[in-house]
Amino acid sequence: MNAVSDDQTSLLHQAAHAGRAAARTLAMSTNAQRNAALHAAASAIRQAAPAILAANEADLAGYNGSAAFRDRLVLTPARIEAMAAGLDIVASLDDPLARILAEWTRPNGLRIKRIAQPLGLIGMIYESRPNVGADAAAIALKSGNAILLRGGSESFWSGQAIHAAISTGLRAAGLPDACVQIAPSTDRAFVAAMLAAAGLIDLIIPRGGESLVERVRREARVPVLAHAEGLCHTYVHAEANHAMARSIVANAKMRRTGVCGATETLLIDQAIAPALLPDLIADLRALGCDFRADAAARALIPDLPAAREGDFDTEWLDAILSVKIVADLPDALAHIERHGSEHTEAIITENPEAAEQFLNGISSAVGLWNASTQFCDGGEFGFGAEIGIATGRIHARGPVGPEQLTSFRYVIIGDGQIRP
Picture 1 (tube, rainbow, N blue to C red):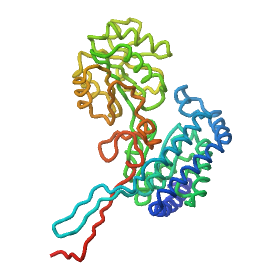
Picture 2: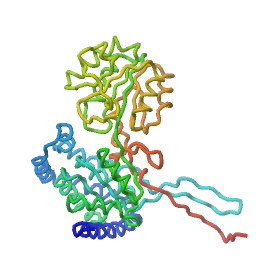
Picture 3: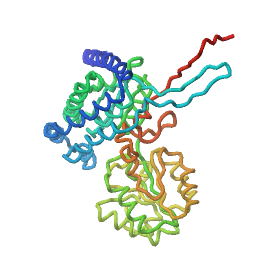
Picture 4: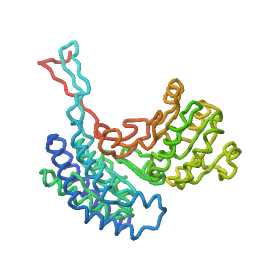
């Protein structure tokens, strides 16, 4: 290990030990104290809006990526207000630590309770979107967890400014600054140190592109709650309402193309495609969308670009949509099974039986009926914010809010029992 890596490992260990101490304080804090910190942090973010915008301008000045990824990086007064409002909403949620998950009495009179508790110190590695740091901090604080943030190099200064405001809120509520920490540099060795920090960090959450998530899964010696790619599908069933389908598909793809809940593949039944697909394509083209279409779709609309091998496995995160005509609902489910990432899928249909078959047939974390895939978002679920979208099959799935960042412990109450 070189000197730079040694330095970053030392910094990580200092931060982790401070974070673990802060986590113990948080675990014993009251819901009122945590809520006070969240409200104070929201107020501090609003007051620091000019400084946060200036920091964001510094980040943007050095960014040369795509327009869609630039949109993920950009902060505006409205987005800063939404960030602050998210903290206030999280504070208004029920206390996730006050939950008795189950309780029962054994024949010997012992009373057993399963009670929610925090996970401890969470490490969060994310890219591009600077508001993710504020969302993650809010979810962690509400659930009694300390958090160590490592944002992307492209949003370094924005992240630092947001973190400074959150620290102001923590101090105002009498909580340690180490409840929320952020990596002091963009050195990648700090990420490696986080991934190796077994016994110091209790959970790593990666949120970013496929390469980041795969690196974390491959190298981590700490449990991982992965935010995998969002290869989301919208399936237009033969019995879809045409006007509804046009509205939903346009929103699902083009509202924000760079978010993980954006639809990347449109599937449409062959029975409805001749009448509806030309209108769907025209609507999307008017919004600036490009396409990658299969042969059946191109037979209807010859000027559609042809899909190449791998296109239906691509999370575009851009104004590009893969298009495929399917034979029927089972064919749509088979396509999603082959190509999906188990993130979010939607069906548009007026047939309840078809909707039920679709929703029961997908294995994805989130399924929607007659609604845009862009509703896969912690704020839209009523969580105030989210720390990520979990697509694995263990622990949390879908948008991860405060409840999903808790585990549980058992409390057993007796009156003198001894085991025979």
